[in-house]
Image (cartoon, rainbow, N blue to C red; front, side):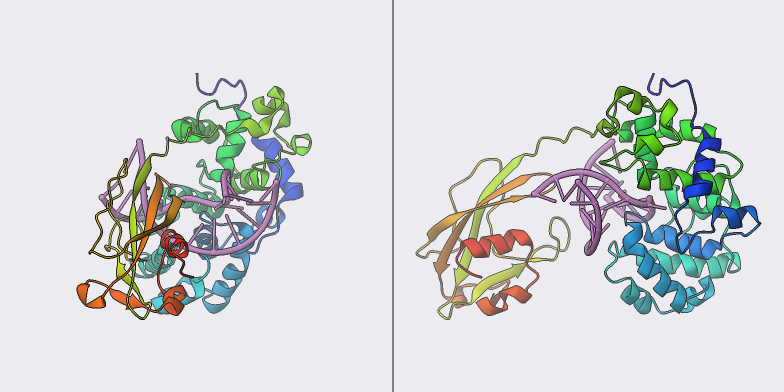
Amino acid sequence: MLLAHPHPIDAPAVLAWYDRHARDLPWRVSPADRRAGVRPDPYRVWLSEVMLQQTTVAAVKAYFLRFTSLWPTVDDLAAAPLDAVLREWAGLGYYARARNLHACAVAVVRDHGSTFPDTSAALQMLPGIGAYTSAAIAAICFDERIAVLDGNLDRVLARYYALEVPVRDAKDALRGALQIAVPERAGDFAQAMMDLGATICAPRAAACLVCPLQSDCFATKQGDPTRYPVKPTKPERPVRKGHAFVMQDASGDVFLRSRPAKGLLAGMSEVPTSDWAATLADPEFPLAAEWRHRGQVVHVFTHFRLELEVWTAAVLPDDFDGGWWCEPSALAGEALPTLFRKVLATAGLS
DNA sequence: AATGCGGGGAT
DNA sequence: ATCCCAGCATT
């Protein structure tokens, strides 16, 4: 039994806590106003939710105010040039979000009469709106009784249930357990649970004494809530080895070239290297020259650890094409990933 | 089921 | 340095 727990989440307790401690956020209708009949503006809720994908509240606030000032309605945003949207998004990261944001605004205007759909199912059809965001908008704006499961909730629920497997392996069970608890005030409940995760049940600190779920929380009973959620065992990081070849012409310019348009470090600049393999082969130099071994670079990618032997040589530029020669003083302005900056540093450049 | 995608804040 | 963040689209 994955979630052996006698009690569902106590929604009334969570809502009572939220009524007193809700965060004041620019896109939020307070629980008091909500009770008085004020309805959130789906445009503002949608905009905030997209900005908040994998992004902290602190980082989003200024962007949200700027966007709503420039474009108060979905019609305004849809009518804006994509360039302007991308410019305003600059610095927030995950730039596909900005393109999808604009595409979504256009779709809402064109296909939905400038009114956001009012169900999670319909919302999820729109660009940039997935399982989480569709549920969040539907719950917050329309009180659809749907489980809203984000990173905060993963953590809160993993602790509440003392989940002994990584969240990824119990997503459906958690969603089902949460779904059972969703009350009539679905929007406030969703926001309450997220506030709870952000302020009380935080990643490295759990303020259990003031938590409305404390009495039934299995992790608290065990004594160390921060043990959850358990992290998936990281796959062993294989090691790959190879050689990097730093060539300079008579004036000291360095040979660079572009990496392929797809794959690792796509489209970035590099110095030539050998293949990267599990075992280090003898170097096959690009051309005959006085090659000097200058040291080793170690770089850790997500899926493997790379060890490159760094070689340098003085060569004649005529012998090469497929790239360009770069003055050492101009290396800083090249699209060089950290790996190749390390290589160049080991070669004695920069 | 994995993987790529940014950048900032907390620890 | 490492972890985490109101995830989504693509393969």
